[in-house]
Length: 282
Ligand SMILES: [Fe+2]
Ligand SMILES: [Fe+2]
Image (cartoon, rainbow, N blue to C red; front, side, top):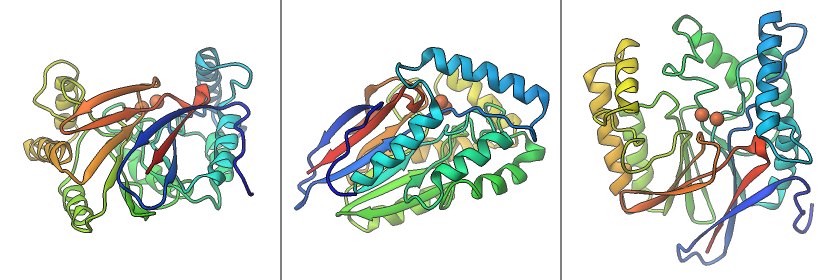
């Protein structure tokens, strides 16, 4: 399609970044659609739960559409007028047959980077019980493209990275992959589900309060002190690495800008409200 489409039901939030590019670049950021469908192959309990969750997101949504599936369809159409699209998780509200079918069909043949949200897969919020994790991951691989834990793509001289922190921890593998991306020398925009920010909500297990709970859950789930140490190390690395120019997240469902080390984190509101992020880079 030529030209720029006007997003009928979407509410764009624009972030302008100046990285000294020869040619301007436009990236579309989507997060937190929270699609909660159920069909005849889902249990009655899941049907009831999904209906209740649809009501919650409908009431939080925005007229006139208030339909997470409709918003995702429209956003993926709108994506055609961008240079690239990044989706930062919680596309599902919960895993159900109905939602798997629908989301798979909307995203089929589309080009995008994706990272998992805690509603797709998280040891901490219980969306991936230990005994079902392998099965859930295999299923998710049939819905979303790419490596679910770490993906990168250089677009117009900018390195876009989407990586998993849905479990509120980082791994040594992610650290090595990140360093290899930094070594390529391009300016980096880093996308995660859970936003990175200074203070209580950074992925720093030594913080009090909410993160103390996360620390306990990670350890209970089989994580070790090493998992927590790696998490602190990678968080510090991202915060301080000059080539990582900004980070982007979702999860909180509202639009916010927070400081994180030597950069900003741009937190985008939920697509279930019709919110889409436009990153304009020059
Ligand atoms: Fe969410
Ligand atoms: Fe989330």
